[in-house]
Length: 135
Image (cartoon, rainbow, N blue to C red):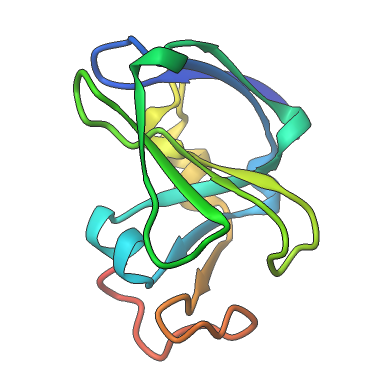
């Protein structure tokens, strides 16, 4: 069921709103960035995400992937979401929301949702990695 969630970083400088359906599942990626963060996220279309406050509190890291933008809070360092431009595997820009930053995360709902494991480390997005226990 599609639901609107509020969320933010640890110090609350960055606040957002996102429309999320956990029945569509969550994602974990094995790329060097996501695996180091243990980034557990949901993918939402850009029109289903609104940054409510803290734009000036964000700074951005961009690794080797030119379409992936990794903003994080300058105050507390929390990585709240990613912005992914096209071209990418979906054909449209989207936001990866860190589910651990949702104010009212229902942990039972999150762990019951299907998890898709992505093989970003080998740029093989259509197939899961051979090892995912560490994610």
